[in-house]
Length: 449
Image: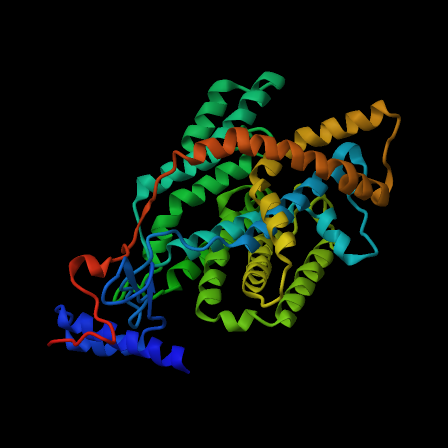
């Protein structure tokens, strides 16, 4: 009770101090409704010794007053999901290697369909991008070219590393490849998994505008998602029109921004929902239900023919008009429910999965090469895994650990050094050292109007 009274006293002193230094009475009154008001001190707060004091009032209504001079908290659970997405893509290509698993095979155990149709890990990656960028930037002003520079420093080094390797190992036209990368337009020119990096970067180019256009005209701190839903409707209309006129839309829906934009946008939307209504996603039952929804949806997609067998490839099925949207909704729900869930994860497990998740970009670009090496080593030791069970065990016991080791190396040697070149790209209000301007009142000091 004593500590609570002391806290209330300090809050009252802080509000009086604001009023005494020119803040309007109306704003001071509004401050009574702040979501969080605290005074953090370094050392003891007393008449004789008073060091740096930070007044933190994140919102008065929806207007931020003061913020700590540090980045937003690191969301470790998003890195857990990144690792999961990388693992899905790994098993997708592991099962397809030399036709190890027939594309028509449908597992009796539904969760295995997530591995069989592991290409859906790409959708999870892209939905995560929309979710994270919205969470970080929703109330900030982005400096466009600083943002682009930051993204280039993040993804270009390892991407270029692999493009050079593919150039020397394969028949890649350097002029076409350079133009495809420079213009961010790919139509089968960029080798390996590079096509997804092109799509991802196209989203980076669009994101600051999506952020601006989704803000209310009357109050930029309010969100108006009508624009985003309009973009979703436009993308669906484009896919439907292409399907209607050409008979297939699979390649457009799967490999271009005209399909993948759904996942970015649903990541943004569910990020906002998770911020506004975190209590909706807290119960473990919500997470369990969402996981069941994801598994069931992918299993039904697999039973319908999956990626390869819906009337041949490329598929003529109408499913591909809507599949990117379905993936975006499912994974948006999964990300929000896992991020906000009140389930307790042991600290050692949390850190371990987060560390693996930090390697996910390397895992994604490295995994083709690692699969080739793993099967070459298996052949050298006269071992050839066949059947879904043997390939799955081989992937878990041999390929995944090897991929993690290689990816840890490329992360620390190629990715991480360039991270130091990244600079802040969003404007934010800095912390105010209020004792530097004037003495901070305490319960022992009178406040003069």
